Length: 374
Image (cartoon, rainbow, N blue to C red; front, side, top):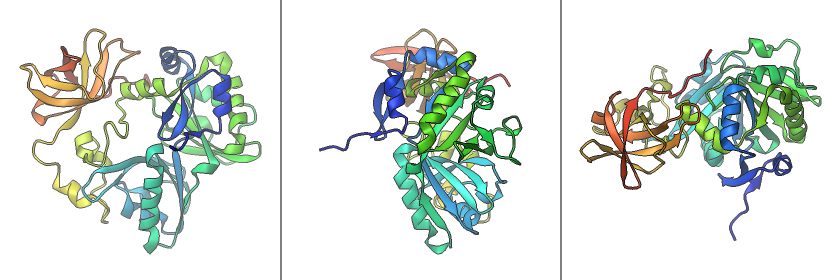
């Protein structure tokens, strides 16, 4: 008998809100509450509140924690300042992406590694195995943490107005927290860790809270945000939002057979650091000649290419494949991410997407498709 999907600590709230659910990485998660388009537009114009408690959190503690992460992940994590975050990668020896991660330095000798839900156990195992020669503790703390994201131009105002959520004295106020920085707060007398990060292309915060307080914090945020246009938002609009922002999704744009440079993430790998790490030699050797690279595609009309659809040259020659695609709610035309042959990857190249037998003209464009107004 197959395992039943896990329920979020906020599952009862989603049911009460009338959410539609899907099985995502072994979790029963809300796809939408009312309309995925309405939720998408709310995030772009006001704010949306997301349950992302399916993400994995792994604590790394010890005097050599930064040194350990430098030797295990692709980035230079020892250089992080206190309460700073960094986007990084866990690679295999072939240079393929095992997972893309966000790492926070949340203490002098402590880091929090945030992994994708589908890779939580893989990342925890890899870190634990690599830590055997270091005197530190690697602990998967995911089951005790709920993660709530508030994203949109009114996110800061909403979080600031949330009753019972108080910044710890001496910590940075929300207004002082820059992008990819964090601060500490309390709610119900327990710690809340707040990062100015997100996966929507908008301003916003991700709040790490004790599972015992998750429902109460969600409710308090909802009350604070109701007059400001805050709506509950599901995975469907989260996907179109991140696609517009040109953000990769593991299993679509990233995988164990893809090098960072193919995905446009070569800059994430810190080859300048004087330490070996898994995949370094393969990254230094570079992608094989002719290896496909990730590009953005824009098309006219209303028919969007979807993952798995073929990309062809104007003469019909296959040159690539769509990894993610949608009719952009913000821009009003189809957009897609695709891996294509290098000689078809230049901005302005005219291609076509095979949409169920019809060729839809598409043009290679710069990423992201959408950038918020600062």
